[in-house]
Image (tube, rainbow, N blue to C red; front, side, top):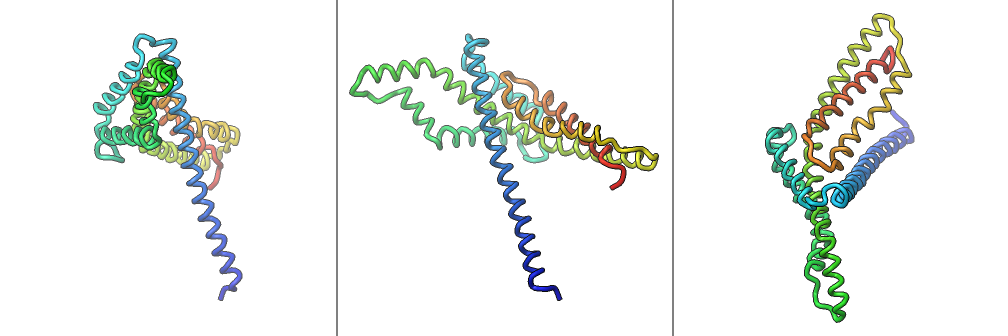
Length: 248
């Protein structure tokens, strides 16, 4: 019969493990939210810089064209998904939810409407200044709203591409295990240098496609972003698995 103290210690250890797992999950979610918001801000800033220096004539229509092109890619080449039944509807819901929580829920939409049609003030000079400020910034505000929709659509595409990363990573693991067994039975040696060198590419292969694709100031087919980084992840995982150690 186990002692009461050992049973209590076991329960405490189990609770600590569960709490640690929950805290890691919550921390990861919070970090992802901050990462997404920072990338969205970067995308908006890049679009504004482009409006000033590179596509002055297009103005906010540049971001509108990007949104139309992204939806065209999604509608023509992503009609099926392992995660959702209709990818295009999933992307539109993401875009609508982003707009609701970022602009309507926070009151930004009401603020923009007030700037567009400010109530008459006791100070006519202030009233005219507000209207003039909105006139100067209206195109940039519209571009920021449109870039939020572009960001949401691209985020939906990346979420739908997660199975491709998982599948290619599994292929890399299986092939790496085969190479490890070949090395094991042929008397080869593991290489800690190669293993640690490959390990450094895990995080970039997972984060760079999100950062590059979400902040890119022009439209590009998602496959040109997703597939190269998914293959890179598979190669890195294969090398790590093959060189991890000689015996498991």
